[in-house]
Image (cartoon, one colour):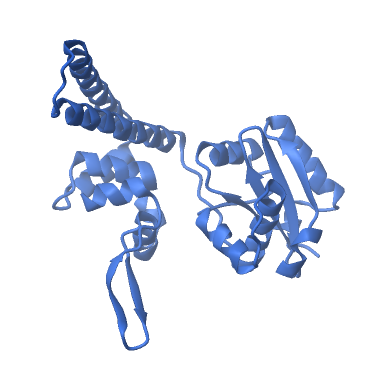
Length: 274
């Protein structure tokens, strides 16, 4: 039957495990799913495609590929796969974990995780993930490194605010702070240069910064994390930023105060919250 399988892939630095789940498969039969391990290299990707072919499946036979969001590993896997097996859905790792708990599974191995991801695709049919452009990848790397440099400065300031008896240590802390400020200045200049070289993104940056309370720093994080905002609905953006309220009530006596659900990416949520 065409379009009847989901492929689950559990990634690690050196290897990845893959499992196939038919849309008619019951979750309690997860242990019987076809699965295999491959090297996390271009040759391993080729071996995965051959393994799929051995099961008499084609790209038309797969509804999608379900992969956990593991940062660079996930994006590298998608880039190397290059659409040869159809659309890829990069999902929040917390969701397959909760799905596995609902099945009563306690063990965690590459094989189990791959089977769970395949069955999660069958049950929830996650949408294909839109791949970021090279420009957006660079913006993400720069904004992430910007955050690390800010933490370095905060740590040095905190240490300098306390008694430091050693003149050498104080000298080193001051030097580290000055060096971090210089690196931050270089990062900001590179971010501005990258945004300016894309007319559409530069136009979006101007529009975003016209919002009261949103300046260059927040704008850069928004563009890095979401890219073209027109791809999303209002509710999708709120969910991705993790700024939607989470309500907690039960019966007639439990009514807690709503709080931020804190889903999605933390960098965008932090920038918007601050």
